[in-house]
Image (cartoon, rainbow, N blue to C red; front, side, top):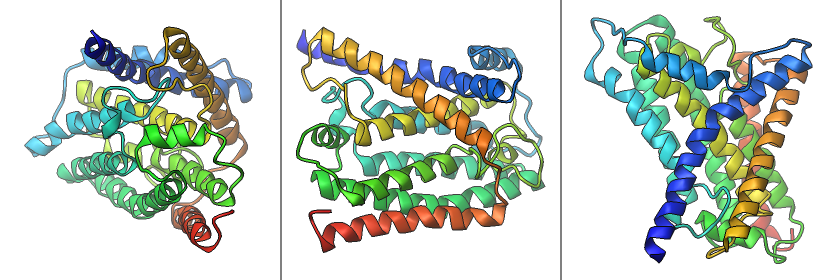
Length: 318
């Protein structure tokens, strides 16, 4: 019975991130609309959009290969697995031993790889531009992410997210400058990875500025729904990752009772709502930067991650 209960909890987390992903995107859009004095679509509009896309017929280019057809499912599967591994309302779940920070970075890198290949498969100019820009962003974002992982793992003594969250929730952490740098680096990487302002504008379709949208212009129907849902899952993943590492309060410990799990779930929903509102305020108050300024922006995250790691070697008290 204990095994069945553990599997049910793990399944609940997998379904939870999948169910909340469109809602978080809808919340960000709604808050942005309100901040610009527009009514905006309902929070549940992304659910309707995904359902409508699932009902439409898939239109494929004549020269599309098998890779173009398989990539949406690979992107969705890799992103969903990565999002389901990040602790949300509890730690120590059945598959928590696989929730390694380096494994999550690898899964996200695999999703980016398939997305870039799919963008170039048909041979359109937009797809090639978007793929090249995506790989340029990945060349800076992934090293910055890994340096953030090294900083956190050196402090917590582990790369397993459950152990990291448990250590960060304890009194042994204290105030560390290196963790502050790692937090800022992770936020910058999260903005870039989710194609948010100032790196990319998720609402634009201008060929001179778009990155993510350029790679998915040739997709339609359920294929486009899979890619859009994967991008929504990635946003939930980064919010949950920031919450598990730097704001782990309320996460139920391993073997927690039902009350602790319910409290952890409620606080996770609050974290999602606050993060969505803050993201909307940030995107409304800042302009999108030029594409060629993006390396400088991500280079700041790379340097912050590097400095955070070096500080741990220079002084263990920081």
